[in-house]
Length: 413
Image 1 (spheres, rainbow, N blue to C red):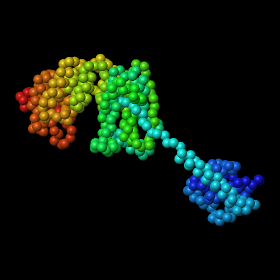
Image 2: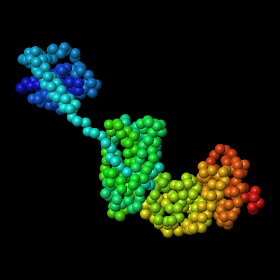
Image 3: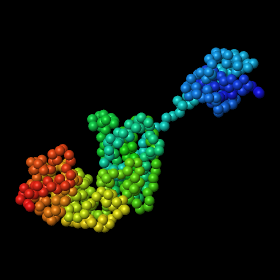
Image 4: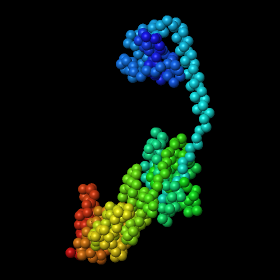
């Protein structure tokens, strides 16, 4: 068999294994460079078990017996003098160092790409209730791991936005610090949204469809070397841009609050009025859904979401009849609660609203009875009847009974 030195596998830190095809001896010189520069040496793919094991352990003791390295040199080289082998090793090592130095020089001289985030706008109503903790979590993840490539910020280009905007407004996010003259960071940042004048739309590349929290995190980390990924999307002809955003259901699925805080229309004037009341006056939405449907069936967020997404119409819900009368009653109850300092908004829960609705129904839908009872609730009556003595949350039936107790005190039967 012809004698040859064959490269048998490599280690980082300039280590590799040499195999002699005639003597079948493995040799591990300590200064032979990695295979990239070892021209003229054939690569083998398999190694004996003992070598594989020791390679995994990152050890230099490839051969079981600890014979001196000079002896291995003689076995591998055959008739070659050890000095000749050393000279060959030195030549290879010099070649690798030259190659590595050239690569380092090229890397240093290569101009650094300037990092800039795309200038993107927000649609007014698209999850405008930004979760601050979610922004911080995204920013911390980016700082630790960089931007995850398969989670791009999805956006619609501005020329397409104009085709699908349907009279909606665009907003920009403004990041400021809680302290004056301090650069915003993850501890002190504040966010506010400002409507963009229509004549400035073309200054923006597009509108965010998915990834609002990631985008705001990038704005806070603008001085960090983070390379975000973007993806352009398209919208079916004639579809509303917010409707498309909700239907996409990408990333985090939209929750009830996301739909309620959006400006997606249900195309029912009374339901849209309730949603606007919720966004403007900050009542609990379940409370409003109950008091604005006195005398009719139960209105739920599931029904509202279906209407906002175009899956259902109000006429599909046969048990619910919202009218000007039901809307007027809801307005009056909100006003009565607002005028009574005991009935603070944090006490006007969905269960309280449902108990009030049941009380109204059980008293022949007489609104005067409801008015008198709400006016009569004072601090003592609230603590006596509307607070669970065991410290638990009041159930719907308990609220209905409490309203009945107040009614009895007023002389009602």
